[in-house]
Image (cartoon, rainbow, N blue to C red; front, top):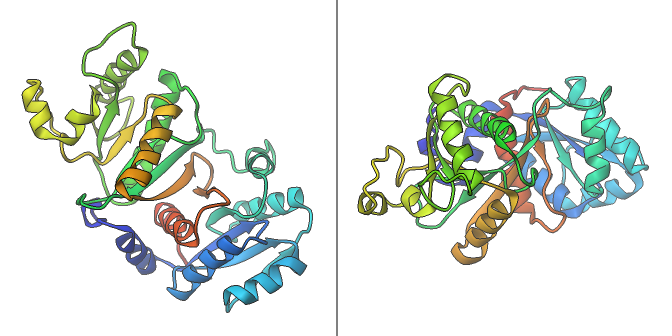
Length: 306
């Protein structure tokens, strides 16, 4: 399967339906938008779910959402609910973990528990996917949501997580733009030095896959004519799959600019754990949560007739 076919989220949903169904483990599932997304996933045959949390609150919300298959694990305490939802993944009863109506720090403590969590030894990082009107395919951005100011070793781990995820989706050699303000390596601008180092890591095999270019500015990454005007020979200009951000501020502003100025749709995941983790804002719409669920399912690739 080639990532080139994923022009929009409906393509992701269709691909997941072909490889599913999956099982979701929802921590503190007493959340209307989360249950609506779960119901949408159920309706299209993408996934079933195990709802962990306060059964007295979940039951009426699940009924109101129109869920047909209601599997509830009653854990009224949110700390216990997070731990139990995580254990379902660890025990192989579910494929994807989803955050419901629970404080993010409480949720992540369960994920990161040294003896009962989902740590894999890799750095956790955020991967976002954007469907942008007028663009020919989804674009991916990392890390605009988790690691604040990563250094070179963290950027290598973030990049490795994202490239591995894209390869699981079918893209063997993703085109990666390591974004900076310009293409000149400048010791006063550490992101440019780190971008050059990451490209060298790819050349010597320390990064396993991907067509990496950097340092590279956004205009060159997006427009071949910009590359030509600067005298830059690029193999990815105008066709980037993955943007590696220099820091969280850049990633945050980049992503929100796409949403608010370009009417983009976004989904997001946490990578680096034993399974992809859907950790969206409580304010995220049901459609946005569904898109994130679909992306997680496609990356995990462990659909089964449970």
